[in-house]
Image 1 (cartoon, helix red, strand yellow):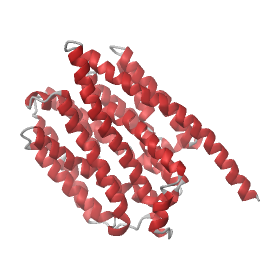
Image 2: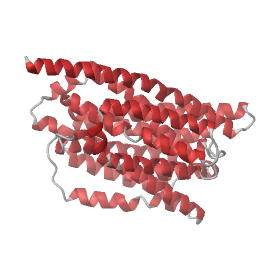
Image 3: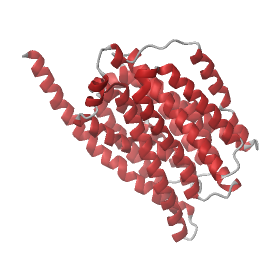
Image 4: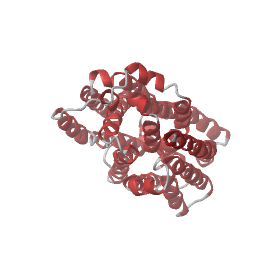
Length: 385
């Protein structure tokens, strides 16, 4: 939830930060991207050490990073303090997932994808709460510093609650798979393919969501509400992951998700007025299952990859978003200048470039569906023999 709040509130105050500190879109992109590359740095390191030091110590570190990051943001004085504070929050967000993804997978070994969806519904929930807070606090003229400071409340609560709990060992340790066995498993070709596809699913979901207010600010008077609506759909979708996954395989769900995400982004570039809210609903339905289903698919079909596999997937996604965000921030500035300051045209150009990614994912996930059918048939035949 704190991770989601950091995304939602940052999305709501991004324009204010640009005005107050005289930052162009390229500089705002650099600050935003810091959270995305801080995340993979923490989650990959966490994935390597969580089996050794335990989940609790990682979550204590996450609390410290969150607290310091929020504090430094509140007292930011320019580009570099915003850069450092956002990095600390990104490190905190990654450390939370480094501990909690293997925790959920270990607690619910027979229902991983559903429970990872349930756990990850609190990310869009945090964004939903954050964007609603930002929307109303902006209307009431409350400073962005106080908006950021609201994150102290859930941060202190989770720090206190986790300090009282005992944590189990990870599933990999409990099942007796060696550390070297885990390292070998992440070289599996299927894992490598899913690792690469995670680039696309994360960019589609997180880049578009984080920048939706900036990209559509001159198309809609309530661009932040589009993000609020999108993540509201994500919360509902992830809450009902269990019945959805009873009707359809995770890989088929990923195909449908990519189709809806592509349609949503296409609509963002072509429609105006109330139709933008329909676009946000469709886009939310598309990206809703991406992140937790990718994690659940890998941990279910390649369980020996363990905590490292889960955290490499998360790290891959966030790293890709950080690079894409930097590139698109510069691209936005270039298009805006060439179009004589036309922000609407620049926003649409960025969205059209992003649209290529979910279109590619549609084809990739269709191939995955057929691959898994063949793999499951071979497994069934081997069992019968």
